[in-house]
Image (cartoon, rainbow, N blue to C red; front, side, top):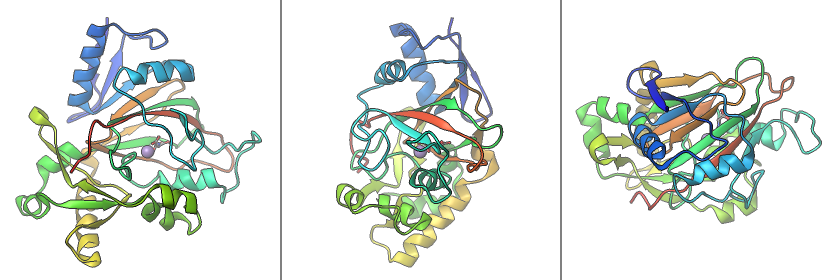
Length: 282
Ligand code: OGA
Ligand code: MN
């Protein structure tokens, strides 16, 4: 019997009584869907699954995104987040994958740089360091609900400009390739998203470079103010990984980031699938 219990107040829940190496029933999927919309982050422990099993389960939530150019797994439904290079050795600190992992240590939401941003991500822990390398989540629904009225008024109807190159360039000037720049021009995203009965959420993150209709300084100041408000302990769930955990999150209602670990000494290997969104945000 599938059971869903909260991991902390406001959001995040653990789902037990499921073996994802075989397909859950329609009723079970309906229960998971409802929990996903309500709790935003779902933790499934002890799921020793293959890539194909992860893809099959992920597809139950909708069509999957194809991994963008310039990322391991490009053109497939899988994204590999690791510090292990093609030769099986740990990459040096300036290695491309290590730098991309560093970029993931900034609060962000997956694919907000695409015209139709992702609905959900599912991340499976295959190799973990002995400490660190957690993944943290902010409920941007709880954040929106708690925003001062004056700030809510300032962002109502506003559009953020999300740009993959913007966040990456802050990590290292050459991290973004010409191919990525061409494939991923800046896109417009609503700053406030509606989730029907569940209320609204704030939509921001590291790819958000500017606010439409504001000067660069004005927009930057507003984004910084909102991000500082969002990144409060009371809105955060920090996931400490165990081997074979699968964690699923709602990309349109949470931000996430990785925490550091001893990347030159220990290996970390995570596999992600990404459920596509069903339309643009504006
Ligand atoms: C991701 C991501 C963070 C982590 O998979 O999209 O940002 O902890 N991961 O690896
Ligand atoms: Mn991510």
